[in-house]
Amino acid sequence: MTKILIIDDERAIRSTLREILEYEDYKVIDTDNGIDGLEIIKKEEIDLVLCDIKMSKMDGMEVLTEAMALKPDLPFIMISGHGTIETAVEASKKGAYDFISKPPDLNRLLITVRNALERGTLVTETKVLKRKVSKTRDILGDSGAIQRIKETIERVAPTDARVLVTGANGSGKELVARWLHEKSPRANAPLVEVNCAAIPSELIESELFGHEKGSFTSAVKQRIGKFEQAHNGTLFLDEIGDMSLSAQAKVLRALQENKITRVGGEKEIAVNVRVIAATNKDLLKEIDAGNFRMDLYHRLSVIIIHVPSLTERTDDIPVLAKHFCEEICAEYNMPVKKITDEAMEALKALPWTGNIRELRNMVERLIILSDRSITDQDVRAFANPSSFSSIAVAAKAEPVKETMVPASVSTIGNATSIYDDFSCFQDFKDYTEREYIKYKLEKNSWNVSKTADEIDIQRSHLYSKIEKYGLKREA
Image 1 (cartoon, helix red, strand yellow):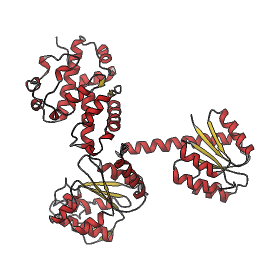
Image 2 (tube, helix red, strand yellow):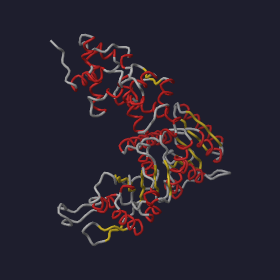
Image 3 (cartoon, one colour):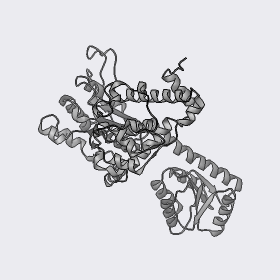
């Protein structure tokens, strides 16, 4: 139910507003002063605030200012018996949705409340969609290390301080960088990513700073570099420990002077960029080895955020696994599978060399290969075969036809031979899904409706799978 907070020191106004809003099926909380109102905003999930301007203890404008700092998207409607255009303009500048004079007109009040609530919903939905498009996921976990990372992001993001994010591959360094951008004043400007390890050393300078037409053989037209693309936004230099020394020197100059020069160009171009760097290497050791500049290290590491490996925070695995399970099942348009407590303990016991990325892949594999729930037997059979001496494929509830399994897989006692016929996990996943669907269809005499019910997917989804894998009923 939509929850509305009324802050007004006049009892009659509070009672009138409460009666009107409760009649419209809104849940109403009221208080006679701004101090208590702010405490309610902190503790409760409030959808809208109606706030008087002239109050004792704390002025309504002060309440508005502090509330916007706490919850910037919370709709505020200011109410005053001494309203002027100047007051209304000031309230709007501070973040108020609208301004209503006392005594409030009933129809206008209700329309304004509905519009403010709709706007609040749209703002929330827009942020969620923007986060999906920008691949910004929530940072999940309750461990002390993750809580410290979240707190650091909250403190550092509003500033322009450069940040160095360290941690193993797959631990979530990119996600930290995305949240630093998302919570910064630059959030509406671009976040430009550069994977320094994926770009050849002879091309990294052109990638970062751009080039002029004809500056080298293949430069057939002018190119705008990543620094210019990120102007007024954030530049994320991933795997910066792999950047060449010559490129490091130019990055250092750009950070010192906030100016860049395109390859083959002479004109200096001013850039306003916040730089966030990430690495899986120990840069201090790289400095000792002569592979990284100490002066650049000190420029980049104003703030250092270390992202722990998954094995350092195994207590977060249940939260992550459950989230991935819900997300992947939604993508596959299938009911969410339950992960048993025993399966969670089995997951926590695995060696997570691939960190978060590996966990998500394993959860996806378990969803595809397990039955209605994911058990510890499923984990031992499918999650990380290289960690176990045997793979219990034959222990599944449904018997597997010999013709369904390639020769290497039929040798189930030898874990190292399971994947010999597959070059990558996607091939294995597609093969397993295809054969599973084929087996179920044959078992049900190609009754698509019955098969869809049995394997818990929609009939239209099953038809799509049949078409995807080119399955045909044998004559």
